[in-house]
Image (cartoon, rainbow, N blue to C red; front, side, top):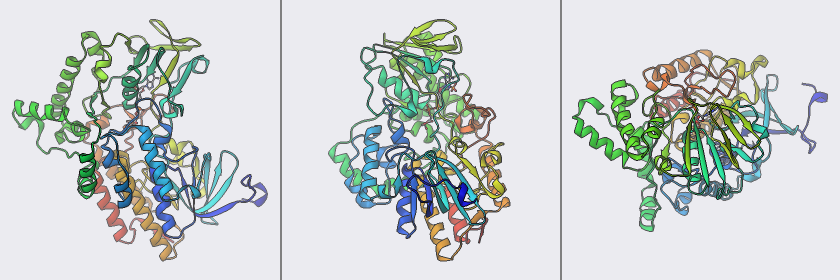
Length: 546
Ligand code: NA7
């Protein structure tokens, strides 16, 4: 590109860095910290005006962890672990954002983060072996290496319903919720969507809204979170047992504190099975999902018995029979989509101020200035909340114009589904590293645990390249083919690949996201870590280094 056609940053100069990181969420923050330690010059571009990524954007009412707080924080600094007190077993969003700001301050991260800077394109310059990155405001920068830390759920999607902009009340997508808490008292509120986010929103809004109408297209199987405050003794116990906590996470398939049960659901007597499921249903966190009978994920009959158990619970908890039936999923089994964890979610439907509208019976036809109209009724609202999900995993890549060798667009390369090596690099896109990218174990994980693995692996790689004077790394096409095949093979037996969900890249609100393509890596975090370590130990096999 000629100098004349280059747009430079408003400040005037085109800056050069060793590494550019896109995103200052949990992965970008830690990556910055480690790369700076290697003596590399790093610039992070962040669209928001603060750190935190997911926890910066998702300020919707009721947003909180489904992972145990103390299994979610960074593990890399003993001092950080000891000085931070989590107030609840499953902390709420404001606390997590405070935590991440504390981390940013402690490690002095913000001096290398440029906020309010959305990256719109990243073009690989073959002659210079570097990435040319452009921002929405016209700014530009270059770096030898580009690392995406953009998160798998960072592109909120609104439904394709006529009139959204015409609504005269307050409205927002949960992923772009207002920074100030919204007061729902005395208000008529609509929530559209009943995924993990919708469930958390609904149970919170129902506490204070004058009236809440829930618009549900597909019900999900939800299970109790069983959150509680952390008292002083427990806090001390947690702080004394961090090594065991993280060791437990390392040993489990998706890095949670819950380990799958290796018994087959149907090989044990019915009473024993029932007692086991009852125990899981009564325990905090994701045990009922990731600590359940392992064959629940692969054997329809095993899955049926768990689904039936949860269905019985729904029927017990929702008083109105007709409403209970509407809340029971019919098109998939328990755990084949993301299980929303809840606190009195089903009881919300016993409240006089809550109405459930089944969109399969009466679809939404349009949003009006005063509310919305279904094929059955008109509803007036003061607030409409869209909990309608994200353009998952690949969406964050699609909205940046990423071009590799020969000007090839990443979006075109991935048109038939993502192809990567280890979910971390892409053939034809040298020096681009994708933290928690598609087909990376981080997508199916207690995410900070996999983030740390990804980030540390990338930092080691950067150190290796620096020490050996390599300036360019890219995977071979064969390595990419083998990994992609392995990803699909490990997923092929899973019932979740036979179901429409964001795991499979389905989003009816996004053009072209209508064919099932598994976006995650389901081989497990331990196997993934081993594979990454083996690749590194063998001199980064599968990569071409120049
Ligand atoms: P999800 O799980 O993708 O849920 C989105 C919800 O919105 C789901 O119930 C959708 O119904 C519903 N939806 C989407 N579009 C529409 C339209 N047009 N009309 C009505 N309802 C609609 O997103 P979440 O934000 O809840 O969770 C994402 C992840 O964030 C979650 O898994 C956690 O890991 C954190 P559908 O099922 O498509 O019928």
